[in-house]
Amino acid sequence: MSLETNKALMRRFYEEFWCRGNADAVDEFVAPSYVDHQLPEGWPQGREGLKQLVCEWRTGFPDMSETIDDLIAEGDRVVGRFVLTGTHEGPFRGIAPTGVKVRVTGIDIVRIADGRICEWWYSEDTLGLLQQLGQLPK
Image 1 (tube, rainbow, N blue to C red):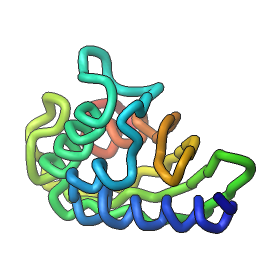
Image 2: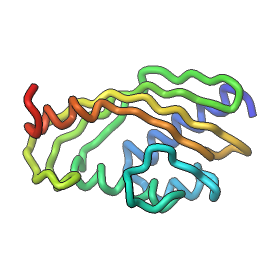
Image 3: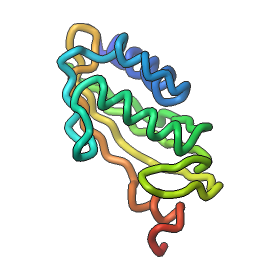
Image 4: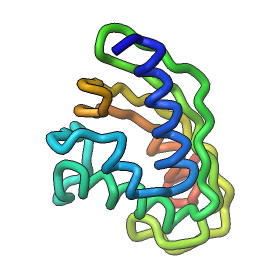
């Protein structure tokens, strides 16, 4: 697949999965053999873990949206730099709703094969998120 095709796949995935919260989009965009290299401990691996991840975020931040600042593709990899925004209106990782509007930056690296995401590495500003939610001093 071309680099532009891989980037288009990621744009569509961000929109459907993260911005719209469509967990079923995983079945279209993610390979059955998908590996998540940063999934929280104890979560199911593969597509089910990814679906659980978006449900957790959407429960905590129902108005969540992601803006893509950069998409860079080389070979079978796409790197996305994003900003996630949302209002903490539901429980999230043991934290009761605070009503706080958050802004979290992050970077995703995915490997694409046969038109589907098959591996994912990511890093987001968890420290900044916890500080915004009043869980850690600023």
